[in-house]
Length: 89
Image 1: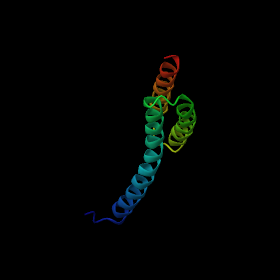
Image 2: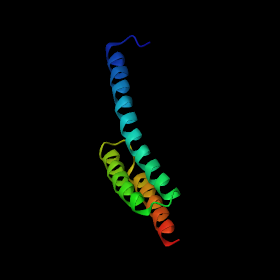
Image 3: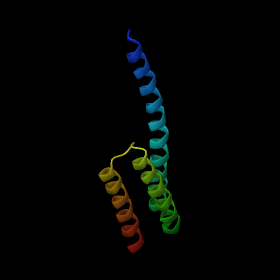
Image 4: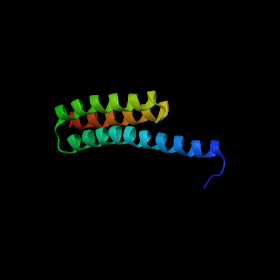
């Protein structure tokens, strides 16, 4: 346990930021999962709608600093490629 006052404060701040990041990560991960599930069940229109929600959630995560810009771009790109591949079948 920290002894100094500013170290105690830093622990509280870290705890709060961790909780916020978990919420944001949960939102975009569940959106990605919903998109992948829609693709796996061959529901292309549902997958496209879920992809829009996933894009929004990923962009919000980037804006809040939870996710890096290039990581977000990679996730969106891979999801989009997955949907396009399923749509051409």
